[in-house]
Image 1 (spheres, helix red, strand yellow):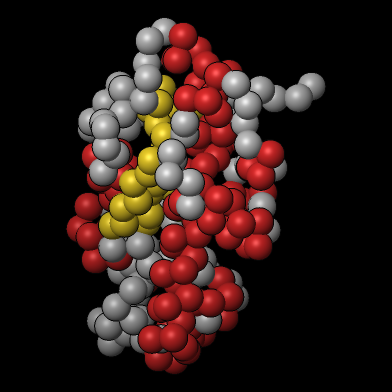
Image 2 (tube, rainbow, N blue to C red):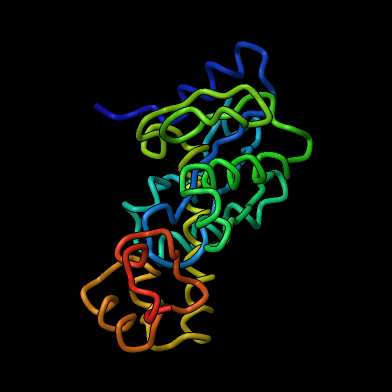
Length: 214
């Protein structure tokens, strides 16, 4: 059966919520780079009348190709009626806070950037206690809600672009290929060159590394 990816948005709209944000993040698992969150509010007409044909294939960003993500990113950010906020928490802050709190901070900051403020948010995954508006947490929400899927794409593309820039600064680590996730070559590169400033020192195997590595 086809999934109605606007069902949650319509339910909230009919309950009187006028500014409904989808919220998602990218980059919880990598050994390097920031965790990035996005919050997206789509126009009323898209919810009530007709979802744009150009965004018909919008889905969980992990289910899309890089080319598809870039196309959807351009469509969403190029539409004046779409409101969005994007926020990042860097590797050193992740080490200080832990990745869960860092992810929540990025989500809260992304939602706080929305103007006007969101009345309600649909959040991928589990509840975010500090979020600055009421919210509904949806497990696998990026495949169940277009608003969350939109946030997923904006967060993923933003983070991937950051890691492409990181690859130019630190070419030894292959960030352009794996975006900071740990492929087989990463431990060898770290052992040979040591970690760079983008590596998360609180993550295994870096957490257990001897002082000589740092």
